[in-house]
Amino acid sequence: MKENHLLSGKRITIHGKRKWVKHRRIEAKRIMEYLCLDIKYVLVDGEKRWYYQLAIMDVFSRRILCWIFQRSVRQKEVVALMRWLDLRFGLKGVIIRNDNGSQFLAHSVRQTLKELEALQEFTYVATPEENAYIVAFHSIQQSELIDRYVFSSYYDAKQHIQKYMDWYNSKRKHGAIGFITPM
Image 1: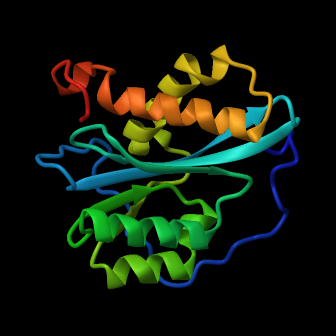
Image 2: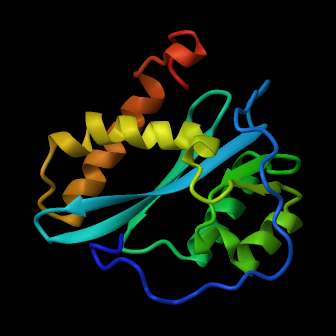
């Protein structure tokens, strides 16, 4: 990120305690027990610009429940997605695992999750294996989609990502869940 001038130079101070992950490996026994989320950077060659994709995955089914793709992902977008997820699926008692990105550390995000009665847990710094499910998804998406296409515009990239997400959820079979699709 430093090489591509993606760091703002600001230092973020955290107020309040974080709940750290207890176990690196998640043993989900049902749908909507654990959600993992993370941000992926995608280069749109035609615009010579980086865009950000935030994806939220249900660990049990490996389904991508929702995602956004835009120039930046701020705390207000994370709050909006959490509220949408709560309306659609209900977040009460759901454990939400994320890294220590400023969007996830933000007071408004933490407060919203508290109001929705979701349990947020943070991975330890520099331990992507603690968020392995969504990190693995991003790696698969990188090799199956992003490395294969040169995106001419934001809209071109978003259209390809939408098709990929639909295919991933409804047609791609996963060994970890018994060679069935997430849907």
